[in-house]
Length: 435
Image (cartoon, rainbow, N blue to C red; front, side):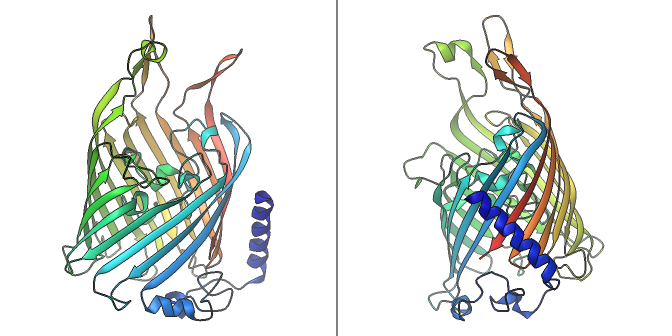
């Protein structure tokens, strides 16, 4: 049973925590080699074949992430739920493979199973980002990313294919990703003003590296199909275009590493409007539409303490800010701010931790009845604290706590009337295994 499997992994992890030496960095970081407790993945180097492929520019990486969460007070439903997601990623570097210079091919297959408490808090932001992919609220397996990138010079490249958009945009050193590590709440992994961007869709883009150091500054411009999802090819789903651009610059303050990022998007797609009339629902009038949308956003990360120069470890701050048109995306204004740590304890180089707060100014949709207008949402806020415990480099256990002031005001209950939704407290634990 899935829940029993989760508890088995949890028990194994606790045993390793008690039995193993502390995890520390070593020379095996650049390969898959090493003994069971020192190597970077559970399955290791596959008798040397995996390292040989790595030297030829070919990698196959997989991980499984499992999450058990419960709404222990407030929200819409107090039950506990278990869910998980697996991901397999393959990469090809054409130059290392002896083909031609500057080419990179990436394929990503992912699937999820069972359930999450995302629909039980009343919040606009999912408290378990991991369970949103490849498709929210369903158990699916899909090829969410198949892209090819070609650098035409050291400073310029192009890419095309089916993009997995979340990992490729709005990057932040302390708060970013699909919830497999760092924060679980979507409000810390991405800026909600970007919800108009499909999570998996066809796209073509340009990548500009203004300086000789590719880590110094990156500029991106992408033309995206405004409708798409991981379970379809995307060629039959064209419905408008989305123009997306951003730039990220490394910036050192008092000789401490940091980054500044700014971006924006515009879509000409014809969306379903947030505001509707009663006659639209019960009569023959067409659903109200809204033409186009836009958003702008900014984020930063900045170390406050670095024990070793040039090593991605220490304590820092992060923040995000964004604004959208407010229709069809109800997240009109947004900000988040928090603290992040990586390897802060000297003997725990692979541990991570974070504390964060977010706030969304919600553009409230209206439902017009004959005698009055009803609204359904309110502004939303949330706190989250987590700590990734690296039992080994390939096994991470993460206790997590969240407190959410959800955007949904109330739910309708048959024969009872309106039931108001209060502040939700969510507890959980995540286990990630790198294969």
